[in-house]
Length: 196
Image (cartoon, rainbow, N blue to C red; front, side, top):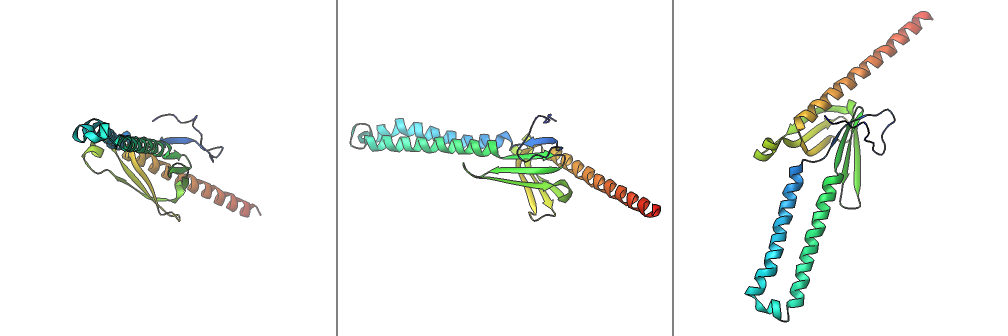
């Protein structure tokens, strides 16, 4: 496990320690880039093949329209590439010793941040479907909660089984800590009542 002691995020509590910082698996962004690469080959192919099939495109009245459409398609590919990268890079799940923070980028100018206290975890499920996710060990992790947001979902994260184990251990230690604090409080209350 990597060391995240120097990692900080907005809203982090003074005594809170970052244990995991998760992004979607690299295969998720590669698969999206593969589609964009295929579109780029279509663009380049159309630039060389269409003028041979339709000579008016290369030396006729439709030349400017053809170049305009080619540039428009190129701009569409470039913007889509940028949006895919921004969505991948800024979608992040942070696991600390006290809570889980989900930062989800929604387009270029919107971001949604939600958090889940470890005590509110009721159940954790991993979902790894398909040959490639099984082989590369990535998938979804779903946390059932007791709060108003019933499900907390990590999409296409690497090593979901290990992440599940870490979160379950954090949840158990959080419950144990709460039980110890409660028993200490009861002991103090009983000791105080006996002294009076």
